[in-house]
Length: 183
Image (cartoon, rainbow, N blue to C red; front, top):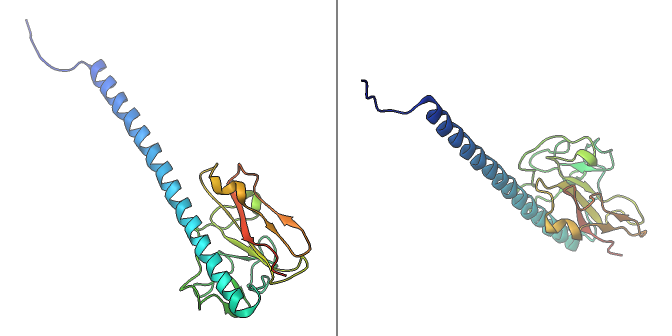
């Protein structure tokens, strides 16, 4: 009689399946952690950008008026971090930018062109043009990857003519932040 010791094919397949399942769980958790880290970076960068815009306003009495930065998406009245990027700055009023307040304007951690707000991903958008007070209010629109962030419930901007902008639904990750009319 042969008395060989070892594993059967079934035992090996079970072990391989368990290892595969554990590896999948670890990779999914790692991906979620990466998304949360990118969202934390987005929120921090937008806060820094808002602080720079407030300092710009304090010094100039106006926010940079959008529409003079070469963007076509969503239309030429906006600035965006993909099309408008020039010399580390995308948020600018013609040649005037935030270089006095920021070393460079923030760009999404996963930069990608977005055609419109319904598919925003990888692009920051800036608007401060019209609605009863160009340069007296602004909004920044961007998207978080992890849906359900508590910050989504308090976003939105009111313009000088009373228009209210809130591009997100509270459940799609789209954020609209900025400053209400300063008049």
